[in-house]
Length: 306
Image (cartoon, helix red, strand yellow):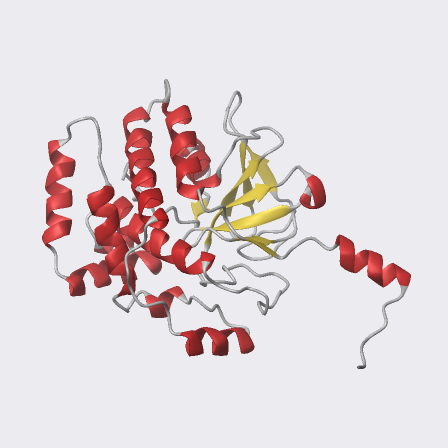
């Protein structure tokens, strides 16, 4: 049996090389809900963060007991991996019916302690809407066209999408996934990142991973480089004094966009989606300075509170 013989230095490099992708934990939505509950305390947007926490608890319930629907086409996944394409390509799968069962399941599992007639009306509208319109809304969200669906429905359609893709992701063998330099979009589903996270322990200490807005996988992306235009010139790192979230925004003067970064060294219990929602005041500051947010959060309708 022939093979490649590695020299000692190569062996050390191979052993110390950090993983390209990291799967989210199976209790991801439970962790998000708990973090949102904590961040909601004495927060100006406490009601919205509590709503997001309730949505995340519904997502976890569905992830723990997913609906019985066919898995994505195995041949399509295999061919995508062979050709270096996202195996769970969002722009393709969102046009199928599979994710709609996860949306229905999230709606059934969702409960909110506080009465909210406006929310009840929105959910009733969503439950009565046909599958073709729901898919059109899903396509709109995946493509970043938030204005094509009612703002009140965004967090719920987004939650259905996230739950479906997280379920499919956790059942995927990523052994053949190809690593590419400057991977600006999710290597698993092709969605844009929601934020970056700076790790602080073990083999990945000090490394940045981008966090997918859809399937929540994390993939390694070098620091001090804009994930939108790949510029390394004069990047600025902005934060609000006294912020408890461990969040800074990497602002790029070349393309005038920014991406939030969660520094776990400063917020060991931090989680990207909850930290993003709890730091919307930072988005307002960056907008005033002329920076554009390109990172979607599927539980947030731009310009509103969900």
